[in-house]
Length: 440
Image 1 (cartoon, rainbow, N blue to C red):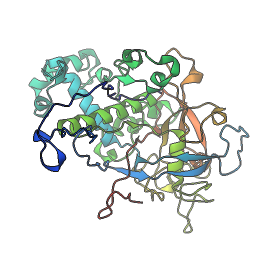
Image 2: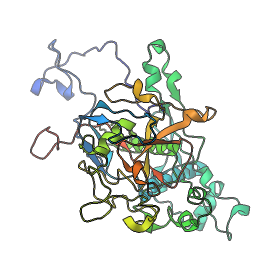
Image 3: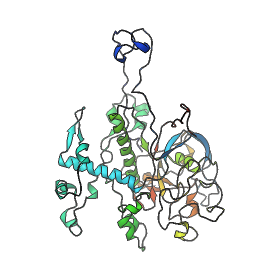
Image 4: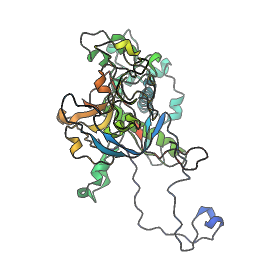
């Protein structure tokens, strides 16, 4: 997968310091550098204040044994046990919920509607941007406003009982992607930057969840109520979003990065790293919660605690779905977190990672932040579109809940049992009264 949008700083060949009189603290008037012939350094932005990402927890750096913590019943040997080191990162404490993903959907809806209505304004760089002040006052329930956005409504023949609704196929997210890995290749040295940019990388699919997956995934099974209510009803607002493909999850990460950095830029603060899907190694390291070689996030060896209560939402026994407290999914924070503060790393919904599923991947990956990605095109063979999913789900047996068990799904498919969570590469937030020391 191509790395998401980044801003590259051009190298400056020469800086000419203008002569100025020296002021207090070794700086000249207006904060300029003193003309004393010494190197003082130039900060890239104003004073940095690290934001604590909302809803995320810090996973400290460390080393662990990656791979199965128990025997491989299929004898596939596709995930061998080995020592791996991981740098620290932030991760969502829960899977992305319906409410959180709905914020993305509504943002795209408003953006598309504003452009259709011509509610844009020129920016300082000459580009046209959505007039968000206008959209904040735009009331979607007003009949006059509905007529103004008729281009993104379902056509009259597709309306149910004449109800005017948003056409989900029109909810297209536009975003540019820069391929850092291609740009870093030696053979590409000196190539123009434009060669590694994909314009409108997410413009070929709708970002709306596929709610029909609840019916499609289970033949001869009555799941229509979940199709109608799961994403739209407030009762499921804090449940994990499903029906989202790997591509849609990647688009969400890209939007989340843009959303944060646009705010920081408006406050003249430093830009932050990209939100993204975790690599397979990061996900497993976080799921273990510091418990090396344990089978589950809570340890070994059982799916029940000493009181006999099940520790996750999955398919107990031979199909006693409600025994664990949830028939389908449960709230994203429905069970006790692991030692890193991460909820439902096993069960509830399986989770997308950024890694491609390849049986021999462990034979050539580095032991430092291992990662293997492939941004499959639409015309690539299905074998190249397999993405690793981890954690098991509400409809899976206990084997898939193990921290070392990996399986896959195709990147353009949406399932009722697969969700995702984001990570971002930031330093640990300082503790109160501890200066720059990280909170452990």
